[in-house]
Structure formats: structure tokens, C-alpha cells
Amino acid sequence: MHALTFRRADLDEPGAPGDLDRIMAMETAGFAPANRESRAVYAQRIDAFADGALIAMLGEHVVGCFFSEIWRTTDDLCAEHFRLGHDIGERHDAVHGDTLYISSLTLDPDWRGRGLGSALFAGGIAHVARAHPPLRSALLLVNAGWQHARRIYLAQGFREIARFPAFLAAGEDGIVMRRSITWHAFADERTPQGA
Image (cartoon, helix red, strand yellow):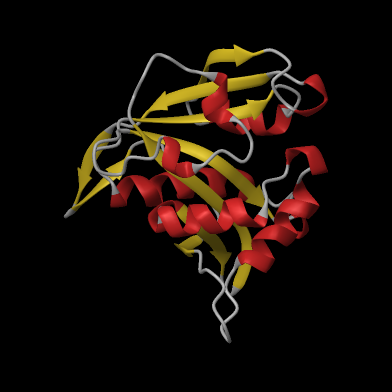
């Protein structure tokens, strides 16, 4: 297993460049134009939920990013909640929410093919779950055509719970997947099983 570490993403400030340029470079290299989030969306997500806006490091190298929100659990899965560019403030509730919504995950293309995708995914979930122990499940939306990503998610216990026909760019189906987060004790911290 690769020893990725995670840190909060930094916003750009005058005289102190943050992580947005790097995040946008990974977004541009990793996704087709119709599937990309904007710089403004990432800035809002970093500002609104710093614990869920993570940069993945392998040693001194930035290898990916992981963005998430905390939602209240509902069985009413509305496609509109998952739209590209949605406002994190519409559903994010770090105080009362118990579902981790993984809104974006990007592995730098220069680091692909090295087994880091699973480590980025599991590590991001574990990092946020440790900071927010009330989490009980994780939720994501994936393009039906992204077979490699779906295999990673299935291997980590996610199961399809909804499908939105022709929801994504070019008429692709969006698949909503969920898995539970269960806990067991390790020393003094709570660590999610399977993450």
C-alpha cells in the first residue's frame, strides 16, 4: 500500500499562492471539458469545508485531490443535488449530517498506473471520517462509462443505489453509489473500517 498523506487545500491569497492552480491543472488533465468543475466552485468548497478539501501527497509530491461534503441522510436522491457546479451550501451540514458525499476525486495523470487511485479514495474517506465521527455512510456519483473508477468503488464496498439516465455530459448515465462507514477502536482514535 502507498503511504499517502493528506493536508487541507489552501486558498490563494495575495502574495501566497495556494492550491487552486494545481487543482485546476489536475482537473483539466483528468476530465473532459464538459465534466470539469470551475475554479470558483473549488474555491467555494475549500472555503466552506476545509476538512473535506484535501490535497494528497506522496512524500513531497502532490499526487491528487479529494473533495467532499457532509449531507443529511435521505432516501430522496434528486439528480439536481448531484449536478456539476452545485453550491456546497445547498446541502452541506457538518454539524447534523451523517453522510459523506464525495464530490470530486482527481489523481494527477502523471501518477496514474501506480496503484494510487485506491489509496487516494480510501485515504480521503478515512481522513474526513476521523475528523467527523458521526458519519455513517459515504455517497458518490460516477459516470456509468468510467469502468476503472467503478471497479475501485465496488472493491471498497460501494453499491449502486440509483441511476440518473442521460444526466451527465454527452448523455451519459450517472450512477449513485453508497457504502456504510462502520467503526472500531484503535488506541485513542476512531478509524473507519474498510477505509
